[in-house]
Image (cartoon, rainbow, N blue to C red; front, side, top):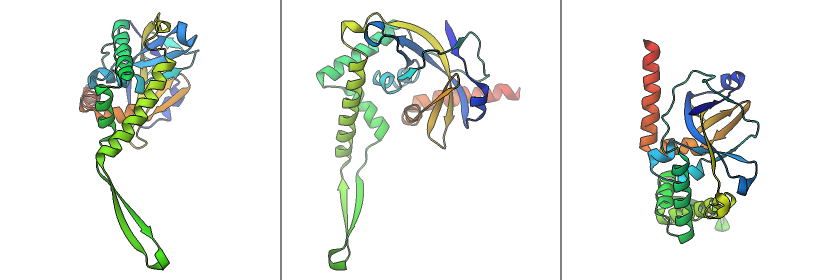
Amino acid sequence: MFSYVYVDRKKVSRLQGALIWIPNALVRLPSCRGRDTFLVDCCFSALADNPFLRLVLLKKVPRNLKLVTTPPIDAPRLEPMRCSEGDILKDFNEVYEQLSSGVAPKLDSLVEAFTKPRDLKIRVTTFPLLGIRKRTYVVPAQKIFETSRRIAFTTLSNVARKLCLGTPSMYPLEVSHVYVLGCIDPYRKVVDLVLGKKVISSASHFTAIESFPRIESEITKILGESEERKRW
Protein backbone atom coordinates (compact mmCIF):
# COMPACT_ATOMS: atom_id res chain seq x y z
CA MET A 1 0.00 0.00 0.00
CA PHE A 2 1.29 3.45 -0.93
CA SER A 3 1.27 6.43 1.43
CA TYR A 4 1.79 10.04 0.37
CA VAL A 5 4.58 12.30 1.56
CA TYR A 6 2.93 15.31 3.16
CA VAL A 7 3.54 18.62 1.38
CA ASP A 8 3.33 22.20 2.57
CA ARG A 9 0.82 24.01 0.35
CA LYS A 10 2.68 27.31 0.61
CA LYS A 11 5.82 25.67 -0.70
CA VAL A 12 3.89 24.11 -3.57
CA SER A 13 2.24 27.42 -4.50
CA ARG A 14 5.68 28.97 -5.11
CA LEU A 15 6.73 26.30 -7.59
CA GLN A 16 6.49 26.67 -11.35
CA GLY A 17 5.72 23.69 -13.54
CA ALA A 18 3.56 20.59 -13.84
CA LEU A 19 2.72 18.72 -10.64
CA ILE A 20 2.80 14.92 -10.61
CA TRP A 21 2.95 12.23 -7.93
CA ILE A 22 6.02 10.02 -8.44
CA PRO A 23 6.16 6.51 -6.90
CA ASN A 24 9.18 5.78 -4.73
CA ALA A 25 10.34 3.46 -2.00
CA LEU A 26 11.58 4.65 1.37
CA VAL A 27 14.54 2.38 2.02
CA ARG A 28 16.50 1.87 5.22
CA LEU A 29 19.65 -0.22 5.65
CA PRO A 30 19.93 -0.30 9.45
CA SER A 31 23.06 -2.51 9.49
CA CYS A 32 24.85 -0.13 7.14
CA ARG A 33 23.49 3.39 7.46
CA GLY A 34 21.91 3.41 10.90
CA ARG A 35 18.84 5.62 10.95
CA ASP A 36 19.27 7.12 7.46
CA THR A 37 16.36 6.80 5.06
CA PHE A 38 16.68 7.02 1.29
CA LEU A 39 14.20 7.76 -1.46
CA VAL A 40 14.59 5.12 -4.18
CA ASP A 41 12.91 5.49 -7.57
CA CYS A 42 10.07 3.11 -8.47
CA CYS A 43 9.19 4.24 -11.99
CA PHE A 44 11.86 6.00 -14.05
CA SER A 45 14.41 3.17 -13.70
CA ALA A 46 11.86 0.60 -14.87
CA LEU A 47 10.81 2.67 -17.88
CA ALA A 48 14.46 3.18 -18.79
CA ASP A 49 15.25 -0.48 -18.06
CA ASN A 50 18.35 0.62 -16.19
CA PRO A 51 19.12 -0.30 -12.55
CA PHE A 52 21.85 2.37 -12.32
CA LEU A 53 19.15 5.02 -12.56
CA ARG A 54 18.00 4.03 -9.06
CA LEU A 55 21.35 5.20 -7.69
CA VAL A 56 21.46 8.32 -9.86
CA LEU A 57 18.01 9.42 -8.60
CA LEU A 58 18.55 8.33 -4.99
CA LYS A 59 17.97 11.01 -2.32
CA LYS A 60 18.47 11.08 1.42
CA VAL A 61 15.29 12.26 3.15
CA PRO A 62 14.61 14.00 6.49
CA ARG A 63 14.11 11.70 9.46
CA ASN A 64 10.88 13.41 10.50
CA LEU A 65 9.18 12.82 7.14
CA LYS A 66 5.41 12.97 7.56
CA LEU A 67 3.26 10.46 5.68
CA VAL A 68 -0.48 10.63 5.05
CA THR A 69 -2.97 8.15 3.61
CA THR A 70 -4.64 10.49 1.09
CA PRO A 71 -3.01 12.90 -1.41
CA PRO A 72 -2.66 16.36 0.20
CA ILE A 73 -2.55 17.93 -3.29
CA ASP A 74 -4.66 16.97 -6.30
CA ALA A 75 -2.27 15.91 -9.07
CA PRO A 76 -1.95 13.00 -11.54
CA ARG A 77 -0.01 9.90 -10.50
CA LEU A 78 2.56 7.78 -12.28
CA GLU A 79 2.09 4.04 -11.89
CA PRO A 80 4.64 2.23 -9.67
CA MET A 81 6.87 -0.29 -11.43
CA ARG A 82 9.31 -2.83 -9.99
CA CYS A 83 8.92 -1.52 -6.46
CA SER A 84 9.07 -4.62 -4.26
CA GLU A 85 11.94 -5.34 -1.89
CA GLY A 86 13.00 -8.15 -4.24
CA ASP A 87 13.04 -5.81 -7.25
CA ILE A 88 15.18 -3.26 -5.45
CA LEU A 89 17.58 -5.90 -4.14
CA LYS A 90 17.92 -7.39 -7.62
CA ASP A 91 18.82 -3.98 -9.09
CA PHE A 92 21.25 -3.18 -6.28
CA ASN A 93 22.99 -6.53 -6.78
CA GLU A 94 23.18 -6.03 -10.57
CA VAL A 95 24.73 -2.59 -10.06
CA TYR A 96 27.26 -4.04 -7.61
CA GLU A 97 28.20 -6.91 -9.94
CA GLN A 98 28.72 -4.64 -12.95
CA LEU A 99 30.74 -2.10 -10.97
CA SER A 100 32.85 -4.85 -9.39
CA SER A 101 33.66 -6.45 -12.74
CA GLY A 102 34.38 -3.11 -14.41
CA VAL A 103 32.16 -4.25 -17.30
CA ALA A 104 29.01 -2.17 -16.93
CA PRO A 105 26.91 -2.09 -20.13
CA LYS A 106 23.91 -0.62 -18.30
CA LEU A 107 26.08 2.21 -16.98
CA ASP A 108 27.47 2.79 -20.48
CA SER A 109 23.97 3.10 -21.94
CA LEU A 110 22.95 5.48 -19.13
CA VAL A 111 25.99 7.71 -19.71
CA GLU A 112 25.33 7.75 -23.43
CA ALA A 113 21.66 8.64 -22.92
CA PHE A 114 22.49 11.42 -20.44
CA THR A 115 25.41 13.00 -22.29
CA LYS A 116 24.57 12.29 -25.96
CA PRO A 117 28.29 12.68 -26.80
CA ARG A 118 29.21 14.49 -30.02
CA ASP A 119 32.43 15.89 -31.40
CA LEU A 120 33.09 19.17 -29.61
CA LYS A 121 34.73 22.05 -31.46
CA ILE A 122 36.75 24.49 -29.36
CA ARG A 123 37.98 27.72 -30.88
CA VAL A 124 41.04 29.28 -29.30
CA THR A 125 42.36 32.78 -30.00
CA THR A 126 46.03 33.51 -29.33
CA PHE A 127 47.95 36.77 -29.60
CA PRO A 128 51.52 36.07 -30.82
CA LEU A 129 52.94 39.56 -31.08
CA LEU A 130 49.36 40.75 -31.63
CA GLY A 131 49.19 38.88 -34.89
CA ILE A 132 46.05 37.23 -33.48
CA ARG A 133 45.63 33.64 -34.55
CA LYS A 134 42.51 31.52 -34.33
CA ARG A 135 42.68 27.77 -34.10
CA THR A 136 39.95 25.13 -33.85
CA TYR A 137 40.47 21.98 -31.84
CA VAL A 138 38.10 19.02 -31.99
CA VAL A 139 37.43 16.85 -28.93
CA PRO A 140 36.15 13.50 -30.30
CA ALA A 141 32.79 12.22 -29.07
CA GLN A 142 34.47 9.01 -27.88
CA LYS A 143 36.81 11.02 -25.65
CA ILE A 144 33.85 12.87 -24.14
CA PHE A 145 32.05 9.58 -23.53
CA GLU A 146 35.09 7.98 -21.88
CA THR A 147 35.56 10.96 -19.56
CA SER A 148 31.87 11.05 -18.63
CA ARG A 149 31.86 7.30 -18.10
CA ARG A 150 34.92 7.46 -15.84
CA ILE A 151 33.31 10.17 -13.69
CA ALA A 152 30.00 8.27 -13.49
CA PHE A 153 31.78 5.01 -12.63
CA THR A 154 33.73 6.63 -9.80
CA THR A 155 30.72 8.52 -8.44
CA LEU A 156 28.35 5.55 -8.47
CA SER A 157 31.01 3.23 -7.05
CA ASN A 158 31.26 5.60 -4.08
CA VAL A 159 27.47 5.60 -3.68
CA ALA A 160 27.39 1.78 -3.87
CA ARG A 161 30.10 1.55 -1.22
CA LYS A 162 28.28 3.92 1.13
CA LEU A 163 25.12 1.80 0.76
CA CYS A 164 27.14 -1.37 1.49
CA LEU A 165 26.00 -2.96 -1.77
CA GLY A 166 27.36 -6.46 -2.22
CA THR A 167 28.11 -6.90 1.51
CA PRO A 168 26.20 -8.59 4.35
CA SER A 169 25.62 -5.14 5.88
CA MET A 170 23.16 -4.40 3.09
CA TYR A 171 20.71 -6.70 4.87
CA PRO A 172 18.09 -6.43 6.16
CA LEU A 173 16.49 -4.02 3.73
CA GLU A 174 13.47 -2.14 5.09
CA VAL A 175 11.12 -0.89 2.38
CA SER A 176 7.91 1.13 2.44
CA HIS A 177 6.11 2.66 -0.52
CA VAL A 178 5.26 6.33 -0.99
CA TYR A 179 4.22 8.86 -3.56
CA VAL A 180 6.34 12.01 -3.64
CA LEU A 181 5.02 15.20 -5.23
CA GLY A 182 7.25 16.40 -8.05
CA CYS A 183 7.06 19.67 -9.95
CA ILE A 184 8.59 19.49 -13.43
CA ASP A 185 10.13 22.88 -14.18
CA PRO A 186 11.27 23.10 -17.84
CA TYR A 187 12.82 26.55 -17.41
CA ARG A 188 15.18 25.62 -14.57
CA LYS A 189 15.49 22.06 -15.96
CA VAL A 190 14.83 20.43 -12.58
CA VAL A 191 12.15 18.36 -10.90
CA ASP A 192 11.38 19.87 -7.50
CA LEU A 193 10.58 17.10 -5.00
CA VAL A 194 8.42 18.35 -2.13
CA LEU A 195 9.04 16.72 1.24
CA GLY A 196 6.91 18.55 3.79
CA LYS A 197 8.38 22.05 3.97
CA LYS A 198 11.59 20.94 2.29
CA VAL A 199 12.07 21.13 -1.50
CA ILE A 200 14.83 19.14 -3.18
CA SER A 201 15.60 20.35 -6.71
CA SER A 202 16.73 17.36 -8.76
CA ALA A 203 18.44 18.02 -12.08
CA SER A 204 18.94 14.23 -12.43
CA HIS A 205 15.18 13.60 -12.54
CA PHE A 206 14.75 16.19 -15.27
CA THR A 207 17.68 14.82 -17.27
CA ALA A 208 16.18 11.33 -17.04
CA ILE A 209 12.89 12.63 -18.47
CA GLU A 210 14.73 14.34 -21.33
CA SER A 211 17.04 11.40 -21.99
CA PHE A 212 14.63 8.46 -22.11
CA PRO A 213 11.66 8.71 -24.53
CA ARG A 214 9.62 6.13 -22.56
CA ILE A 215 9.79 8.27 -19.40
CA GLU A 216 8.88 11.45 -21.25
CA SER A 217 6.07 9.68 -23.11
CA GLU A 218 4.57 8.22 -19.94
CA ILE A 219 4.63 11.55 -18.11
CA THR A 220 3.16 13.35 -21.13
CA LYS A 221 0.37 10.78 -21.31
CA ILE A 222 -0.48 10.99 -17.60
CA LEU A 223 -0.48 14.80 -17.61
CA GLY A 224 -2.57 14.85 -20.79
CA GLU A 225 -5.16 12.47 -19.34
CA SER A 226 -5.39 14.65 -16.23
CA GLU A 227 -6.05 17.78 -18.29
CA GLU A 228 -8.70 15.93 -20.30
CA ARG A 229 -10.54 14.89 -17.12
CA LYS A 230 -10.54 18.50 -15.89
CA ARG A 231 -12.30 19.63 -19.08
CA TRP A 232 -15.10 17.19 -18.39
